Length: 410
Image (cartoon, rainbow, N blue to C red; front, side, top):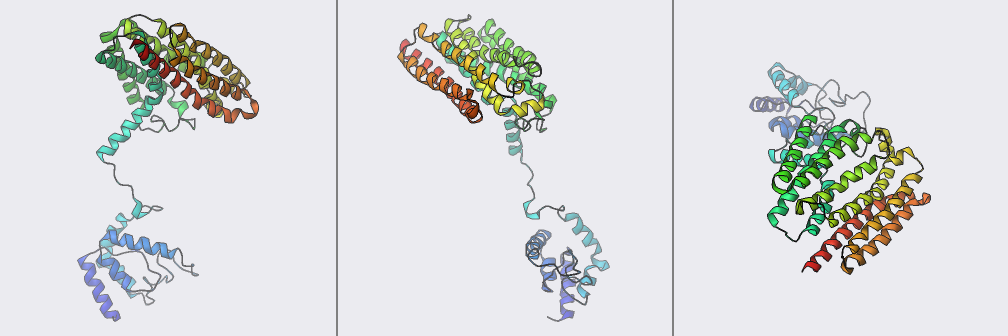
């Protein structure tokens, strides 16, 4: 094709689709202009993207313009500049301005632009944020001892009443956890472990988090007071107050906050017994004691692993105050022994071998893990193993209790 025919074809296609490409070709191919001007802007961007990838593999030539290529006076490799003059002519100046507004931001890949979020995906993101706000795994763990105490305290296992109990307990626990995150939102932003929570990341605003906490707490308390028993509602209210208004501020002041938090974490066992019978039963006290003492050898390994994070945020955990870890290990051992003693109380209440055989085996291995945590040479690695097995231990204890109780009453 001659130079005159090329320019004529270029002008015709420019009038048909006025989106001239401002990117310069370094290969010297004049047909690049026609190709890029004929197709819609998105194809022009694709062509430019592919061309840019090839251009990265071409060594820079002395005096080359990074946009216009190695010929500073002409576009698209044409040394006489005629294509360049056409591209910059008055008939395409407005189209060039339009193209500038459509160019991707510097440093971004035009093919990898994020798609706008759909309504379903936005709702799912909010749901996940609420899941993190209420500390769902922790609250479910708190509801398990409560459900165990409920089932051990009564033979009347009405499905409707049990469902109301679960809803009231979970909503109350959700509210106390959300209150805790709302109060600690500033310190959470300073910790690596918690800076991804929904309030520091602004997925949920502090006002919305406070409103959700109030809604969950009010709903849970209403269900317990109205449909179960006043004593169950009082225990739920005590859990919220103790966890939010006592334990949360104590974390900045004294290492004894762990013991206070353990009381708040064990109160749901008494709530379950009260919801089942209106009083606190021996089975409820037994589960309360197990969970109360178990929480110390469960939590101290976590505090040891994240002691620098806690210290940076100003939390005075025992592992932060005593940097050697000796006090945290010794206190874990002390409370582990009390946990094993509390685990023997169901035997005094009539639990059979279906309970005490797995409880004894799990307790022996649990004690071994705690002793391993006391060894300063293996403390860092043992902390993770102790934390993980502490969850297994409590699960074995509670499941064995329920299985033994179910076999005895039938």
